[in-house]
Length: 482
Image (tube, rainbow, N blue to C red; front, side, top):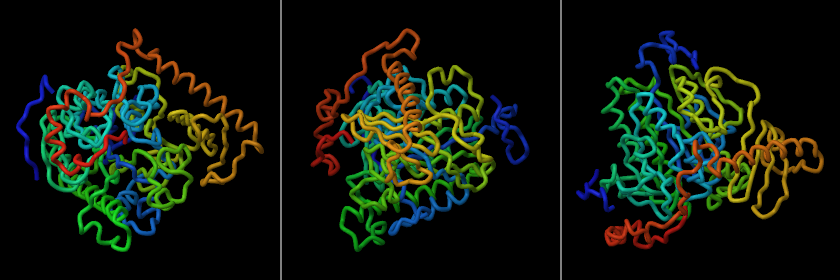
């Protein structure tokens, strides 16, 4: 399964009130073992339409379908941004990506941010990260993260980590807390198997676990096994491998769920699955279920992603149309565990979804804002305000309840609604601008935000370039941002 490269790189390199099955209040129980285990799974570039339960014409996802049928399926769930690094920052902080200076792909997260992993670590959880990271400011195909990296997962609250700086594929070279490991197998198989092994090692201890699995699939360059490509034999090679990666991903999510049941921890494990941004236009409109736009756009196809939350002891099968977003993950978990205010000291853009676990909650109490490299959007329940171009101040308005494909711009026919949403967006955006200056942090910013950089030109990676360029994933790789 793996070869360890024996090199050390140091130096050089409020009460929740939802009962469990016995009727115990999870948040107020003196028995901390009743606190749920938490697993966050995030796919990479999976579009909203790329599941069986959304009736994709070619792709079968039996394990995601089963998970959706057993949990809470959120049909209007949004990534924090239309590309990956910003969404990852939003998961860990509960805040819009610009607040933590993760403006686009490859931007480093601020070290002054308080993360969900740190909060759970302080609350007595085991914490671990497996897979793609992309929050340390490195551009280009994923490489093993150095122990000397001051933004590696360990610095952001993860006690254990096996991670890559960016996307990775079959037979990857990953870093286990700074130690390079040459692993063999599909990318989803490897990180899910490692997560299962970790869970098995800690499940009987006194502490619950928090595990983040950020998959490398179905991000390019796309490599799938012959068996996983077989169902797509009539398609071109890129499509075969792309869909094959999704088949592998689905199978390993099924393996994780089966393993949790076998270990006896499934009932009290909160398993949250979503993608990091909208789908890729290379593979047709079915990638995003016919929604408008793709990855990089602030239309629905770039932001809306599949999402399922499974927690067998609490959540009964249901589909919800409530708008929700990756910024909601942190405040939901904080509310669930009654974490102290010190765990979430900065303004959050998300809200708690804990009540949604047991009942529909009506309309969302807070708008959802998006800022991405000059593009912008604001969602207020059924209405959505969109600024699709970075250098054009033209805004569009859509009623997503009547027009989910964003075909009928209402800005001219419903100017009062448009004006109201634009005022709300501008007030929110002004608060984000203040966060960027460092006003959220006591004493302000303590360091300048470093610019993204390519590992291929970074001095600390120079000793490993010869090793990297001998490998197929790097030999012809061009250092790209995403």
